Amino acid sequence: MPELPEVETVRRGLADRLSSFVIADVEVCRARAVASPDDPNQFCDALRGAGLGSWSRRGKYLLCNLLPDRGVWGVHLRMTGQFQWHEEPAEPCRHTRVRIWNHQEQELRFVDLRSFGEMWWVPPDHATDAVITGLKRLGPEPFSPDFSPGYLQHRFNGSARPIKTALLDQNLVAGVGNIYADESLFAAGIDPFTPSGQLALGRLETLHQCLVDVLNISIGAGGTTFSDFRDLEGVNGNYGGQAWVYRRHGEACRRCGSTVQRRKLAGRSTHWCSSCQS
View (cartoon, rainbow, N blue to C red):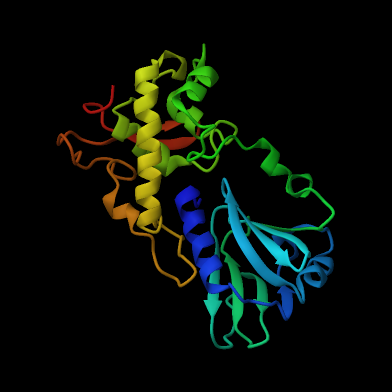
């Protein structure tokens, strides 16, 4: 599933490519791709004729202001959703879910192999989180002042939950998933199975800084591609080749030479070096 760096990479690509895009027509190829409104035809009618304004990201959600005063278009890529840009008319593949054209017949296409991605239209007189209700459950952004070592200490007080599991909780911090939880814990030298309530403030300060650093590095690399992720131009993310532990089980640790381990934790594969992380 795309995590914060991948979604941020897509956001930047959309903002750059679609700065003067006015929607001439919309086609929903698979109704379940539209979460709201219930009728996909209403979704098409709402977007048709709107200009695409500023793009923002909240956790793993993409939000676009529709102009002039036409509400908000929300998108969640889920596991395999991706946008494609087509300068010229082209036949859609069978995994195409939504097609959007401008008056020059250029097309923004949403393709989703596993069909879990969702879109919403938020009317201008509605609060965004009243329609996209998942936004209400998100914790602070990793780069925000609200996400701090003190915040983590407060949230972890008395908790026996493993730190890796805690980092995957979107209520704790928005946008972090399996890849960057593994990578930031390695960078911080923390065993992913450590009960979060046992981490002293000093170690939380290190973890906080490492998480922010790892996310920034990955954003600079265009995210991570291990299977499906591509940016708007179809380019793979480059962070995967820099990964310290994620999907490197059985290989030598890049830091100490020990074998990278893998084990399931809360249903997710967890990768770590038992020599570097304690």
